Image 1 (cartoon, rainbow, N blue to C red):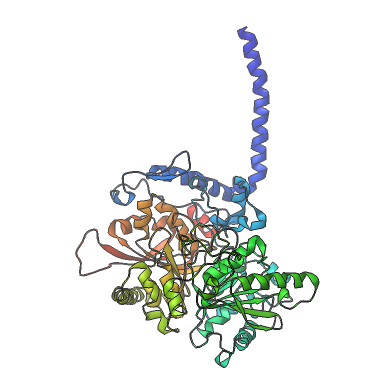
Image 2 (cartoon, rainbow, N blue to C red):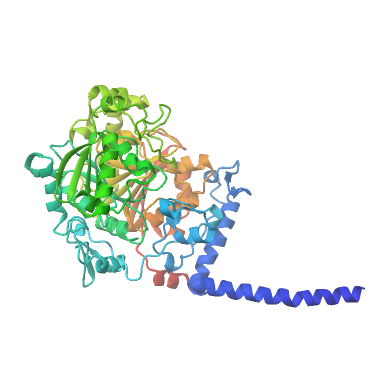
Length: 621
């Protein structure tokens, strides 16, 4: 009996070995170069990341939830260097444009059940901790320091974004043109072949604004450009003191936002899908869509109602599309249905000319109250928080104004630039006094002046363009930079006070975010990151400090800077990673020199080294 049993085991062993060989062969074919020299870096990065997370006390339970040990990693003794890597692996160069939470490969590999018709596959889907790449994102071969603003508005280095398919696909629309070692941007778009500047002036002319200036004497400051292409519309608005949040998904034209940020134009990867856009209600004076190929009638007009939520009282929606002018049967049908929908939403036609229509929202709730009972779309429920946006589904309803906005017959905001320093009405929503607001401005004005003195030995005029304040309060860091030729992405923590409405009321832009996850941007898109107590926050939430350091490196351009403002133990912890991250220390000072505290705040400035993959591999050999 035993002999037969042993023989049976051998018979089963042969097929098992064959199966293992087949599986290994499949993995080799599937991952390709992952088993080559650079693939070893990537696979070891995945393994290393999991091992490191366990060793420092960050762990994942069976449900994938991240947990934190009782011991703070920032309180480790200086002598314990076993947890700090001497170097990080370099990711495979196929990941040089990795956006972890907008990674289509992740969607395919995890087989997420997504509705493609609703654009869910273009929304954020972040990897679990065990699937994260704990490696440095390499720049493309031959990468150059980006061209400086304002010249960068019109041209960038081709080697930095080696994708020319848009130039060929949109060659008849003047989006971009390949010129030798550069890519030039003539200012054209799908609808405005002859230049964004002329198109912008025509919109202002349609609305009878003074001198054909779309800023309308400072009354229009914040704009949402949906389906922005390479963001030439937003780029040309800047000269009129208008700042646009240029928005587009990582779709078949996947590098359009990458080009926008390389040019130095404010932009964000996002899509009108199933979730609210990460902006508060009443954030924008104008929304714009030029041939953005969005079905505004779908799902009872839910996408148009999302724009309605975002527009201020009296805000405009400029829509350039065949439906606005074409005479064929299908376009006429869409136009009639869309006209009927916006009329029920209480929008009115402000102007219509040639291929463009501009609608305007009402200033008060009167029209909403006077609609026939049962009219659709309905008003949103009174318990719906129109400013709750992080992961919140869109609602097919009209967002009425607050009692204060209704009484004011508008937003009550001062024109730009007075708007930047005038206490906005919505301070009261957060229980913040005008005195607190003004004191915050004074504090950050002093801090920013100090930052610039620390940076001055390292920067030249126009060195910095794209800035991010990773944990902004009321936007005073950005406001203190008003005389610099920069723009700031103000990031408000998704689980804290929603001060983002204050930031937009001041005429600045920003978004909500959770720093336990990757940000929705391409690698190498910011020149400077400002991190004020960000690490103290993620420690409380039980998220990986190492993951955040790698994410900051991903976002930061080579030779870019990070200003850490945090407790001394956190700064000391970050210092240990400088070699592994290929960062250099620029300055370390006490944040408040007059306060003597071992655990007080410090300011730590670093600069990211310029490195290429071959150099890094040679250094590690």
